[in-house]
Length: 246
Ligand code: LP5
Ligand code: MN
Image (cartoon, rainbow, N blue to C red; front, side):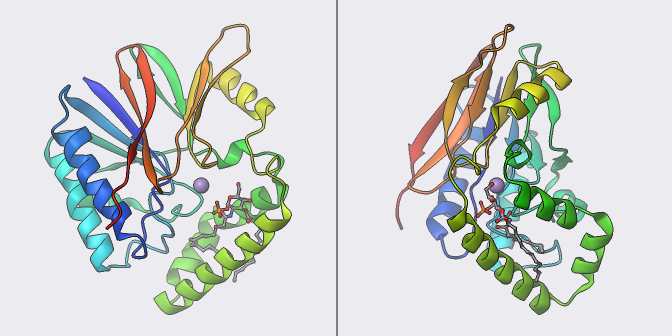
């Protein structure tokens, strides 16, 4: 049995090729994989933006129907929030039979503990972002936001994207990358030596220099290529595949 991880698909109506690539991926890597797949983990930023489970569009309905084929095939489906889709709620997950998992969830692969994260909280130098994150992850703030009419929520989300792009232009690559100390602290607090995350769009396998050894696996965003990690017994492998333009 194998376990599969993806993140940062950033699904949007503007990129039908990504949605198509997801559907092929589900068929090829989950439902009809040569070695049976027991679980798929989506580690955040599955959607480009998510402003509430009450939003329904041709994209959301198609995606939900395909995700449901995974759980209908008795493959466990786990979803973690990213910084774009942290408003995915229980209702969305119930519709497709998925389980929402917390950032920092620990799982076991071949009996080894592995910590799973989106990755944004590891960018500890990005203090502006972390302050913003504290505000929007507050449950009462989220309740207020979700009570607003859809058109208003859409406007706010668009304004935020604009502000985020503007502020990214002023931030160095260093500020927006993972802080090594945060990685070490996370691994030591969770007593794990393996970390899998996304967010930075810098796919790589980083061997760690701590005395216990270990590794940080970074998933890439889906654009020209899709990225996945497949764990098969003790073997964990990051790979990419071409996304066919439509
Ligand atoms: O997303 P990405 O990778 O481009 O940049 C992130 C950080 N930015 C964000 C913001 C999102 O892009 C916004 C989109 C959310 C869509 C759904 C929202 C639904 C709820 C609405 C919530 C209000 O996450 C970016 C990081 C970067 O990753 C790298 O790690 O740097 O962080 C920022 O850009 C944050 C800024 O530094 C500070 C933002 C100030 C915004 C002020 C908000 C005022 C309130 C406006 C409401 C009208
Ligand atoms: Mn992200």
